[in-house]
Length: 270
Image (cartoon, rainbow, N blue to C red):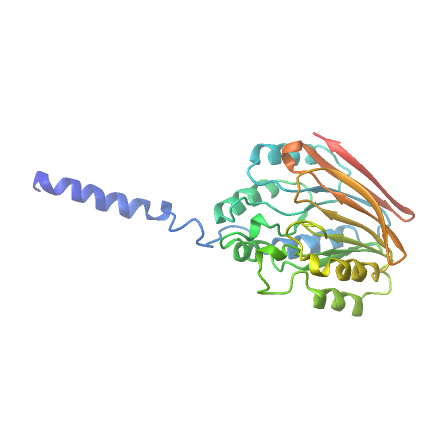
């Protein structure tokens, strides 16, 4: 072998051995590991709480960039034995990168209890919408625990430019048309609340009216603006609350305890 052939040989060897390490593009949507997480975890939640009249769940939101804080939140929640499931109100990713989603998923997978995730506006950037659907499934979904229906919705209208209905009133109407008789209370989960900068505020009043048609509307849960707020409000003669979960950098998660006669709320520092 001539000495001049050695650099070429080394380059070919490197490419052969390391091709699996090369990232084709940060927005390539090639997802490895666990997928369809919401569907699997909803089945776990509903099965584990079947027949129960009381339960407790934690809420986190806007974990983008703050991986250490999210890991600490997972450890704090795992340190308790009284939480049945966790809800993430969106913005796992900052730029919609595939690796951002997978890294956050791997952290959330360390939870001892099942979790579900709604889509945030940052999750929609680039090819993030496609990655979210691959990992978690539809952006509008629901589940039921005891007599409480959790309606989880995509409200990031600004990121869709009318390419699909956001919020999706057909989905809401389908929920109303097919509501089981045993559902007596409803909670709406979303990333951006009505009135926020990414919500389609042309239909803000219509959305709020629709939510009041659901059985026993209790509260909205959302994130987006990175602050903790609690607001009591009324619309269409229905009294309910709005809880905004802070970003995880604040090192706070929300805790809800639901019983037959109502619910209690607490902001927990970790």
